[in-house]
Structure formats: C-alpha cells, structure tokens
Length: 210
Image: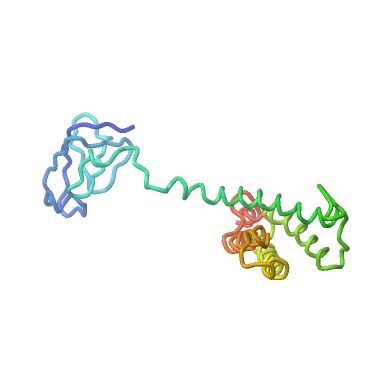
C-alpha cells in the first residue's frame, strides 16, 4: 500500500504544515524517497504526480530524512506495554491457584493435611478462618470477581500472618520462613490497586454494563 519514489508536493498558500518552515508557503518541496499512501487526502496537500491523483504524500517534520525512520520502527517497550494487562491476568490466575491450596490443606486436608499429623483446622479458629479466606478469597481472585476488595482483604491477612507467626522468629525471611506471606501480601496489594486485568469476570461485567 505504500510506494517510495521521487516526487513533488505543493504546499498551498496559508496551509499550516511542518514543512512550511523549511520550504516556505506556496512553494514546491522535492523529496528523494517519499512515501505515497493510497486512499488518504489530507486538507492542504496537493499531489503533483501525473496520472495518479489518489496518491497523497505524508509530510515529515523539517530536517527529517526517510532513511532515518525505518518502516518497522517500534517504540521501545511498546510491546510489553500492550502485553502488561494480559500478563497481569496470568499472574493473578497462577498466584490464586497456588494460594487456594493453603486453604484446602487447612479445611479439607487436600492435597495434604496440616503438619505434623495431616489433620484439618477447626473452622471457628484463627487457622480455620484463615483457611476459609484462602479458599473463598483465592477462588474469587482466580475468577477475577470482586478482585480489588478481595485482594485487599487477603493482603491484610498475609500481613497479619507474617507479623504474628514469622517476624518474631527472625528479621530475615529465609530464616523465619515468611517469604511466601510477604510476597502474597504485596502481590494482593498490587492487584487491589491495579485490578484483575482483561481475562476476568470483572472485565466481563464492566464490558456488559457499557
């Protein structure tokens, strides 16, 4: 759809165009390698190519050469910027799936029971309530439903778990074993601010409402 050729482009008097500063109003500007794009006709640009009036030039800013603008140029980091919401959804789903297992272990002894005897926790105890939050809250985050408030509650649960059970043993997480609690605390806090991403029931509900 795009051809490179030597061409002349007339900038009419009074036209507001970046090339005016270099070529002057009402003058003819000559380009050695100028792209002509079919189907576009911006106001104020008149093509002087004979026999093909549908081809119209796109004028670059002054002192810009076509050789300096590769056709496949992509702004650095743009690809990852486009992928970020989708990768956030993947992170949410994987993290929630792993998180739920801590709750099923406490409540249902699945895929294993609680150490040291492989049993389960009483529901109306602190451990049982924690397991309930992990199962129900983890499932909601996995589905991406009510993600922001649920993730905020789970972040608080992980903060309590760390400072109550891990921090008193040592400052260093590799010693006190609280690295999972710390990571989940900040991960859920991030999702409570950033949202679930496009692959979620929250995004589906928002799309339906709009």
